[in-house]
Image (cartoon, rainbow, N blue to C red; front, side, top):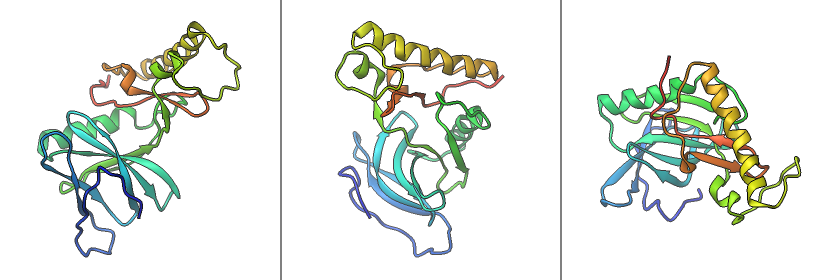
Length: 196
């Protein structure tokens, strides 16, 4: 199984029946261990990043037969479990090309997580500054303002789609946006979003 340098060791129960297992992974910063919850459906590839409440991993989904992102909690408590479920529910049922596509919510108390599309690409800031390129069927110009307009149009479409469903993101910033290899902007991280 492929691993990432952030993943130090794995330990799991002998559960082969689809029950949740926990793999210990190195946590950056404070040196404590974070728990990676997984069941037999998902194969750990590596750690993508972390925020205040959660950690996101790249995993292989054996049912969907594709790589997906899996978001879990650093520490499980009634409050953090509620917040994880809320983040999933904010976007559940909304399908739009500029909003991350959710797959499954697994709210098990011993290892809650949800899965979503894996958006491989770059930050819009790096693209606008010309530090990276993406394929674009629209043939955008090479200037900074052309690239900024290209990103802004997609960001507005994402916000309009959210607002049309009565949702507010409340945390739009470059680190919560990704441009995939085809130039599609995708809004991520709905942890602070609000339902109507």
